[in-house]
Image 1 (tube, rainbow, N blue to C red):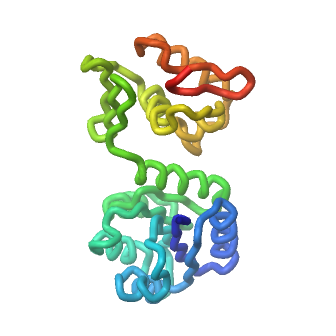
Image 2 (spheres, rainbow, N blue to C red):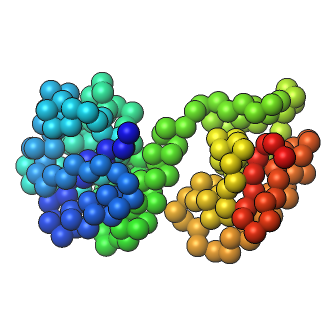
Length: 230
């Protein structure tokens, strides 16, 4: 089933651009321009009418909205039993520190200042949805990776990994048996904020191989890497 994104932005041009890019990325998009209307959608009753076959998987909220502000909507999301854990990205032309702090204090997951790249916004959305939907614990053979404790063990012995190594191993374990390209590994371990040489992946693969016992990461020449199998 398609994941659903609710976009609340009162600027018609920005709303249309964000909506189209989200649709191109494969999401079902509900697009609104008014805070009052958005507040009604957050309620379970209205949601069942507007999107009875879908739950909202991500909120993209402009802060400066007519009627009810994006921060008020964020508070309503966090107070809703149905949506309290749903990821939220705040959009705003206000780049001051206080506004950003208010957003994160109200439990926003990310904050994007206008003007912004819609492609980067989609990358941020994908990263949030990937983290939100993943299993808390991954197990492959004698390797156990926990996102809750941010720890990895093999054969019951803890393995010390850097953040990038941890995220890369998590990507591998979640896709065990499948070939991942360097770009896919960059997207999952570095997210939207890395634009350098993709050969950095090779360095981290080398370090992972050194820290993990057994031959668990295989090079697929000309394509990428595969975890598990042969």
